[in-house]
Image (spheres, rainbow, N blue to C red):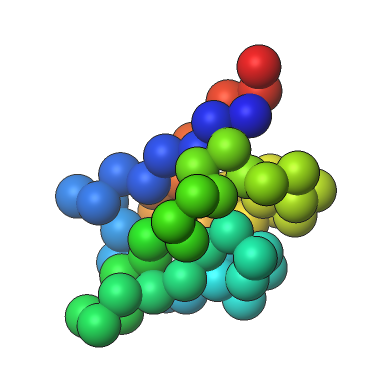
Length: 64
């Protein structure tokens, strides 16, 4: 899987970090970022749910 965050869309709601804290975190300004080394989701089944939880659909999860 490959995960991307559209930083122009992200509003910093934090739903991704709450849903999949092993994959997402928030930067100093509150915007979502991937934890380094977790761009592939690290096998976390909640990555898809985190993308769906995003209120502005800023997260894309592509399965291999």
